[in-house]
Amino acid sequence: MTKRSKRTNSVYSDFHYEWDYWGCWYCGWKRGRCAPFYPYDLEVAHLIGGRGRRKEDVRAIILLCTWCHKRAHGERVVVRGKVLPRITLAEMLWLKRNVDFSNYDRAWLRTLKRDLPRARRPKGGIYASARN
Image (cartoon, rainbow, N blue to C red):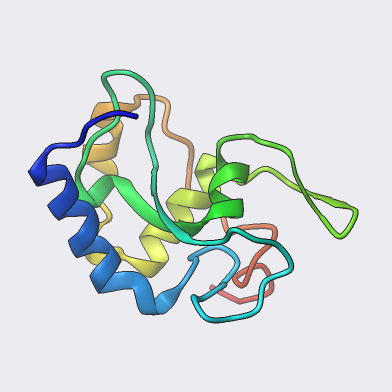
């Protein structure tokens, strides 16, 4: 287990406190709701990961439930016999831009990853059928 600095813990706890009532930005799950699987929690997910590129900054994080976070990392998640699709970086960028616009900074994110894809509406989750 990696040890986090006090500043990192502060960034995460402040972000959780501010956004916790929204629940998972992708699927909409909220604490206290029944879930088809357990354990289930809300986690801070980094838009840009990897050694040396992962930043503890509110411009680079979103809030996902455990299973959506696993899907964002490309892990195989099966619910009730159905394999859920991977959540792409383009979809996570769309979530950041539309849910947390005040902390969305595409130019800053490009300093971490040059070939940043265009933000794209998620194919699944609570925003799949919504109109822009």
